[in-house]
Image 1 (spheres, rainbow, N blue to C red):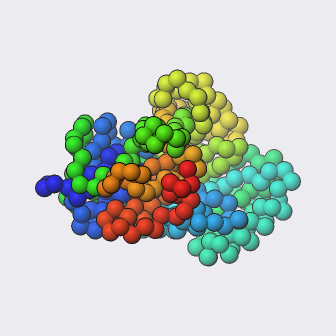
Image 2: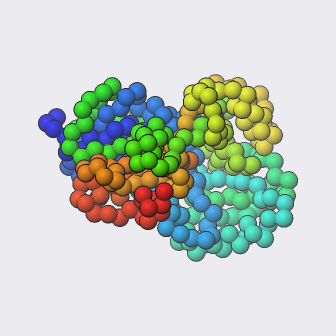
Image 3: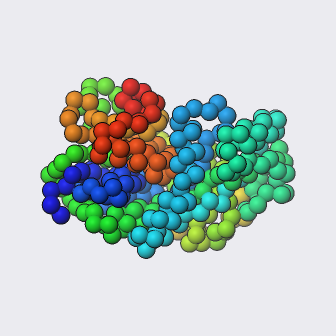
Length: 345
């Protein structure tokens, strides 16, 4: 490759979706990655692509809906180009209705009918009629939405990298001098470096722990209860996650909090009793101060940009956000929503 038009620092889901978007538009793109594909939070286990509640609609929720709506075509195209299955499937999600919450849940069903534009539904069902894995629902009722999807984060990262390289993109591991326009998609370390450079708190990291069980429920929707995701994957595993730890000593070590996740999952979904634990993971997710992803030119650095902060919604949002970033970096067209820009942090 001759000198790149764009250098993207970081091969997580944000960096790779942007690299692919820019390469598909004909730009010469190099990705520089210090460790490996998905070495940060993009290399986790869970892979839940779930919507915000269909009420109090705003730009963030609308953009996330657009991203979830385009996800199936997007990930199928990535698979076709790369030959690697990212494990995507839109199988929905089941969550218990809390005691006293039945009227609110039914009201949100009407909101979904309007806001989701007939693309997906929000059903309120007796727990006995819920699809997939049986779950504990003290109220006797559950919500089943058909918008939520899942993918396998590690496979998705490899598929993105493979598609980018198949189209002529270059990935450099280690260190290399960035050339051309530079995009910093470097996870929580990048947010900390940005905070230092700007002299104010832009964001930082929140550690998460998760685990993987061997239990084949690949056609079942994911479960969500008490802040816990239980996500069946296409390879016959089920991911459980995750913790949210603001204070931590080691960014990549698991501890008793991971065991507590397991115990909570068994209480929610008794069918997982006896399923062996085959992997545990810990990593730090980048969280901008606004909680929304952070996109835009790096203040005071001409030709440099930031694409970061996909806290908990990175895989769901990245394909849509990458198109917005490609417009900005390649063509100078600023479509960044106000809540996602530097003015929000």
